[in-house]
Length: 375
Image (cartoon, rainbow, N blue to C red; front, side):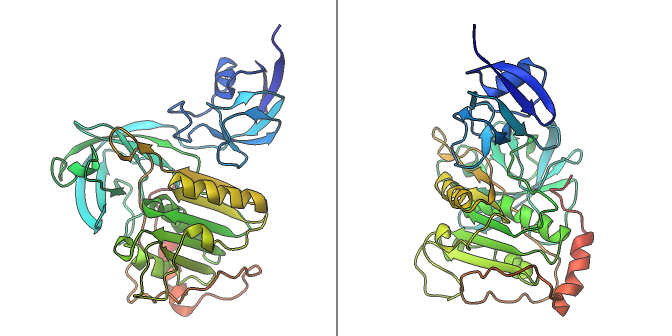
């Protein structure tokens, strides 16, 4: 007779066979766990392991596990979080712009509002093309429109989808969106420090989280490590300068290729410029798997919670097959401050200072705007 284990999901307990996949065990017992790809890629089925052990499904070193890959080997206690139900909506391309030599901004108008959380992503299928996963993001300029979603898509010469942007895929092209998916979304009401780390187009979901976090608490301590390959790819500088207006925000711009244009940009890898983490911090990271894995390991060693959004590649089409998005924008508030020369972010006690005059004037208008990534 097979050995059985008790599994508690939130406050609901069921019995499963030892060795069963957690997702299968839950579904067979009528416990609904969000899921999509069932291959450990999309992150939709990730849950937090509070107690017990599993085999597999925990590849990033954190306590977040993929229910579709984790096998039950003991009694378990796991916690899920409420997320919007996946839906499918029609849309069409209404705007395209070149953001960087290898990044195109694509805006789509949806037939009805697409409910998602800051940092989540969706499957985007341009008519006549295979589906790809990108993250809806806050606009680079101006405020949000609940009927318009903004994406930042990295282009590759041999990309089955990205290479067609501006060519076969033009204004008016029909699109089908499904989702949302992913577990690396903003956790509100966090009282400790918030650290964001992005690489390349991983800036998109992290920018969504940054906007929502500052909207929720304008005096929040937030450190944002933003990495790009070269200066030409650092298209997010305008938005980051506006974010820097808030009193307890530290921006750490990183360019991996050597440059001598400005001392504001650090060299090397973004993981080399992480602040000293503590158990009171919450970390979000998106980008290449090598980056997200390393950030997760550093966070785990410090006892900090970490939520990752790795971009994996589709070998057949040689382009990112999940999560590509961006979010950038603030209302036009005049000239933005320049980024200060690089310094290692200093960890400060809970902020008690008042916001600078220009930031105080800006924050209320920003807070009143509705973030397109919010529920």
